[in-house]
Image (cartoon, rainbow, N blue to C red; front, side, top):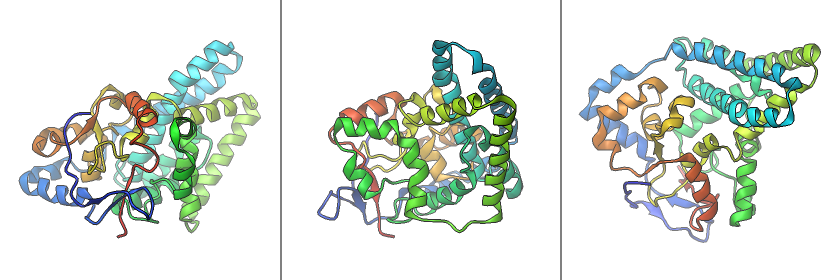
Length: 323
């Protein structure tokens, strides 16, 4: 990682638990104000990216086609394709749903929800509507105890310690990412939740009816691999786990952004959640004096390695606040 970060306002790990506790406002609000004051033209970068829906269509078509085509593939071809291609497509769909949660794929909020439900289909588990609410809370109240469910639960953090524990956590982090919010902070079901579940049920049943269980097994394998020891899964850790004390959010500017809707531009995204993926590089170029001093990650694979091997980084390495 390059750059440094101030540590003001971050309390050392204490008796309460081993998270980092801050008594300051989350950093993105202040930086957003400062950037808008220095560069009011940032407002022109905001708004939806219409290409997102066509990319989603291509990704869904490719993944469903692969799920059917690989039924008769040899084991080596099946395994390699599932890990290299299938898990990458699934993760791209995760991040398309992330864009759509911010209403950045179409002008109307309802259209974004429907596109997200469509993008959800090859992921097998109906989660996109639930994810939207949890994710918006993560942005509005970053690090707030009991609200930001992106942070590991205390029991989760206590259990998965040491190198073997961290390997086990990395192998199954997609399950924690999916299940943790529902266990910590339940949502009230809505009509959109029902539509998400109904559409997913119809799709899953149709796939089994016409092609048997093999496509479902492939899609589930892609889902699990996409959030385990996969290079792209490093972004889950890279975004907010504290590698440089005093800095809560980290960006990555490497080539894997081409496959992930520029989710690596994570400081930029949190500063301006209404700037679509396609304009995040332009945002960084417009305000380099705000982003170049920050610590960054150069490799998501290296992030996973460092998370496992470094004694000072673990599931406790998140910044929390009480309000």
